[in-house]
Length: 116
Length: 113
Figure 1 (tube, each protein chain N blue to C red):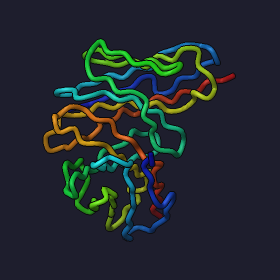
Figure 2: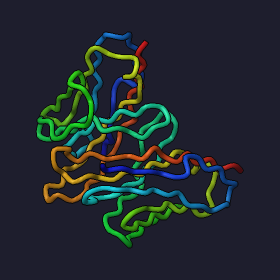
Figure 3: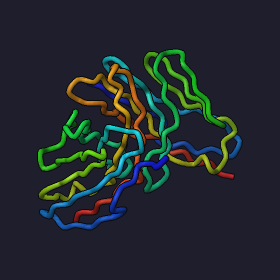
Figure 4: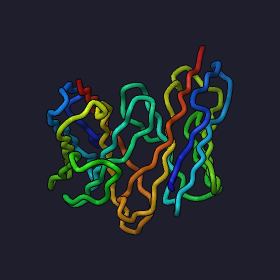
């Protein structure tokens, strides 16, 4: 069984640039969620994708956008980077529970983004 | 507002010194409470899921319990390799928030030999 993978591992950008982060979900999973984790804080929910559509969104501005592909991999795009966007970006995959119950999310290693 | 608070923020133990980490939560309709372990610079590693009050789960030196307002992660006879940040998260009802997890800020555990 292949776990969740993310690329790149580290990334350095300057303010105003755009960035794309990538995630491959765990085998058998159909849902991908993205989280932002600032240093010393818990992860904050950005959005979730199911069946290639956004299935929920946290309190992040529209310059944070995403995609999910037919093979359930996903991208996170951030436009007009700001200094506060510096963080660890985490991707989590899961199998959506259509009955409405809880479901475990399994995280990738993360991408460390630094904005200068 | 759905919220998760973890205490203490940091905990230093001697090897073999048992202790507990606390996770207090307020959420409208708990769908699940999750414990994760996170090593520095890495992604969270799944440990346990608890769904209802009274439920308990165990894995090696770790035991997680759940009440209607809080969860505890008990660590029995910890070893230095248990040093990490432990994160607690609750899963909100699936309205327009998808299956988002709401995390606490974590407890940084350090176990000295």
